[in-house]
Length: 75
Image (cartoon, rainbow, N blue to C red; front, side, top):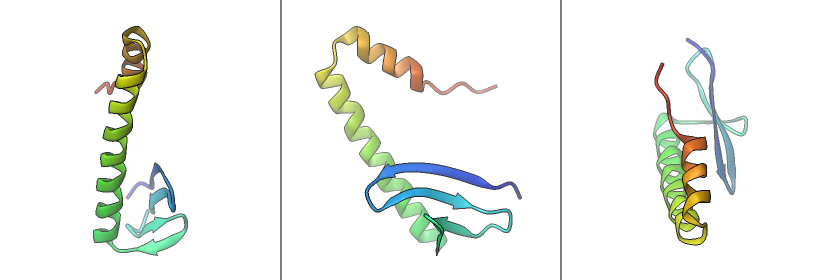
């Protein structure tokens, strides 16, 4: 199994890691799979909020540039 790291960018939980044995950690503290799922859901909700804030406060051209920077490309 490959190690996976996800930066959550949220207060109290910065890095979610799944090691090669499948164990899950938040900032090096072991957590359950349910806790990991809940952290990812919360981080995704926060991201949606901040994307809306960016859309509301940035000029359209700058927001479009931010969107292009974060665009997902499947190879």
